View 1 (cartoon, rainbow, N blue to C red):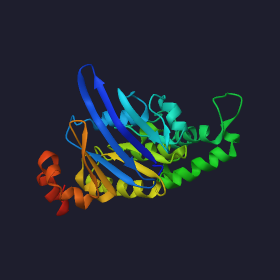
View 2 (cartoon, helix red, strand yellow):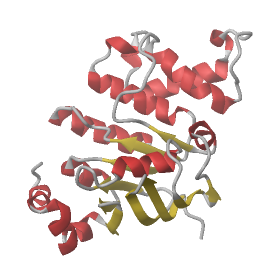
View 3 (tube, one colour):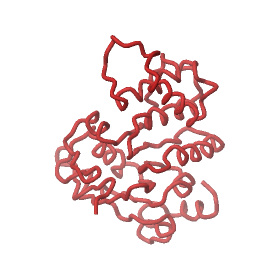
Length: 256
């Protein structure tokens, strides 16, 4: 069976220090997976290995059955995997619309060229307008990205992340720094724009994790100690001992 994303015996060493220690993980197409774990567990390193920012010491990363470990990030992106970052990563001096249009150009077959007027690219403009509606930024269409609120900038980054049509989306702490109200709206937005896509997210807010994920992968000291449904993870004694503890009870009661 071909998985949307699969990690096989994945390891990453920095010198003599082993950060990722033989991770195996198989993600089905359309699943929403949250990766959780204490600080220093290796979550960001795992994301960097999947997206090509780091090369593994050993092991394999497969996207739709094809190995992508060792490829460059832009190559992996063109194969159908897109990623957002903890720090908002947009073009601050371009408008919201222009940011989204930049995100769609390559997927529509346009390469870097100064010979075309972007305003004449009807398909790119239509797709950018569609993305504006998807991320609910129609009223901010012509506003420079630098002038958006933090939550709006994060919504724009989500739009840019999905602009290329990637089937696998990686979101790195998408709700970090948001208020409770903003977080609730953002969870709804993520669910909406990732319909039919495979989602992996690193997230510390347990309310977000249990509200968004179909399955949860718990990473501790560079190993996946559990990969199951939220209910099963809540009840897993090893997870509670290693990481969640009282946070599980809080999440079950609706707290954060």
